Amino acid sequence: MVYSKGGTGILIKYQQKFFLLTAQHVLDENYEAAQNESPFFTHLFAKRGWEGIEGMGFPMRGWRIGELITADSPCIDMQDIVLIELSSSLFRFPDKFIDLDGTNGRIAVAVSDLYDGMLLVASGYPIDENPIEYPYGDDYNCSTVINKHIFHGVCEFEGSAPLLRFFSQITHSEMNGMSGGMVSNLMPKSNQVAWVGMIQKAGNGILRFYPACWIIPAIKNYMQASHYVIDPAVHMANLEIESTLEAIQGRAEYFKMIKVITDDMRAREAGH
Image 1 (cartoon, rainbow, N blue to C red):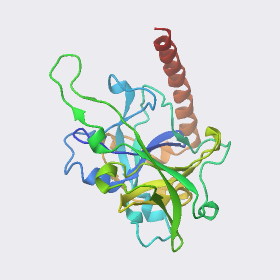
Image 2 (tube, rainbow, N blue to C red; image 1 turned 135 degrees about the horizontal axis):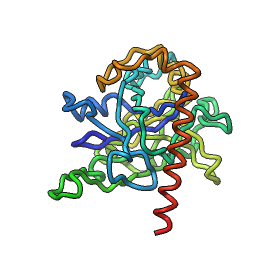
Image 3 (spheres, rainbow, N blue to C red; image 1 turned 45 degrees about the vertical axis):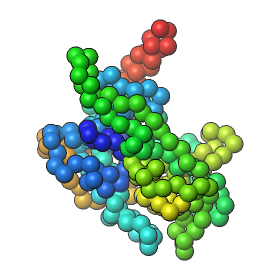
Image 4 (cartoon, helix red, strand yellow; image 1 turned 180 degrees about the horizontal axis):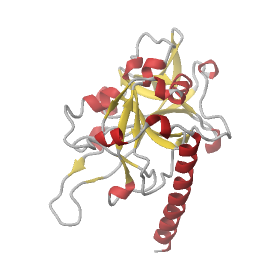
């Protein structure tokens, strides 16, 4: 989310860091120049809103991982993929994310496993349905009602590249703001659902996406990509040290601690 507009991204954990995977044009279209060191934010919880900065994640760097993807699709721009590194100094542990540090289960569907007529689901946050308001008052200065939208369709192929064709004529304006959102398969059980891709653009009844199996290797090699600085505070850190096993283990211990704090907070809220 940008402070004046909305947007969509996929929260990912890798090497005990959290990242927001999204489309670069989502950021470029919503602000021309950063107003401060944190020009946009992401909320950390899928099942609740936020009441302060402890429920948000803030950007540090943007990694141009599209540079690392060698697979080719004639109708989508691989250079539009960006991996936003969030500050590791989180106050709360997110409740829903793709865990690339995990070892259990299939995360992504291979393109070779997709087929014509396969049911697919696209989800994200259209800008028109997620307005950000700035009410006058002492309690808070920014509010929004988070409305995730889900659209169904079937898989088709354009050459070797998969796309999603909607069951109805969905317009670009209805999908505006959903770039960077998730495409997944539709399965009988929730634990069978897997990541198919990331939304790039939609219109004329079809949605184009980047296959997840192309993106994951790039995420795992993100430090080989070029990057840009969002928060100047990153200059105080050393990327090589951050990538050491000791640093990764240290972040894991920190996240374990804040997960306990987050779980306790939810338990108290449920008790009320």
